Image (cartoon, rainbow, N blue to C red):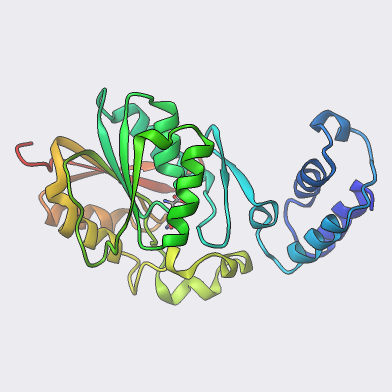
Length: 273
Ligand code: GLN
C-alpha cells in the first residue's frame, strides 16, 4: 500500500489526523526517515501495516498499535494497561520541574505509564521520587519506562489503592493526574477511550473522588512549603478550588495551551507552612 492509499483509508474511516497517522505508521513499520516521506508517496507491503490499519479503523488508539508514544522530551512504552500520556499533562510536568526544590523528593500518585514521575526526573537529575498505582501491570510498565529513560535508580514504585490507603514519607510535592472523568459521561466520549483502562479514567460520580481521597489521606505527607499539583478536567476549576479551601489550602488554576483550566496548584499545606 502507498502512503497516499493509507492516508485515504484512514480518512474514509473517520480518523481526524489521517495524514499524520499514516506518516507515523510508515516511519514505524517501514523504517523510513521523516525526510523520505516529504513530498513522496512510497509503498510499503508489510502485513503488520495492514493489521495496524484494521485496528486503527476499529478506533484502537494509534499509540497502543505502535506500542509507544512521545511525551514531554521522552518516549514511553504504552499498553492497554495504562492511560496513554496526553500532551495536556506536560503542563503539570513543566510546573513540577520549575517548582521542586533542589535535591527534593516528590510522590506521583496514580502513576500509570509513569510519564509524570519519569519526565520530571529525566529533566531534573537532582530529584528523587516515589510513584504509586493500584495496577501491578501499570507499575511494571512504569518501571520499564523509568529504565528506558535512565531514571530507574531515582524512583521507587509502590502498589497502593489510594482511595483507601495513605502513603509513607514526607514529600516536597504531591503530583497527580488521577482518573477524573465523571462515571456517567465516559461512554459518551471518543471511541478510542473504550480501549483505555476504565480504572484510569473513572473519577466517580462527580469526577472528584481521587482528589478528595488524596487530600484526606496524603496531605500529612506534604513537607512545609510543599506544593500539590493536580491535573484537572476543563470544568473542574471551581470544584477543586472549593475542595482545596475545605482543607485550608489555596488553589491557583493554570490553563493549558488550548486555554482550558488544566492544572491546580495547591499551596498553604504542609506541617508548618
Ligand atoms: N499519571 C498517568 C498519566 O498522566 C496516569 C493517569 C491516570 O491513570 N489517570 O498519564
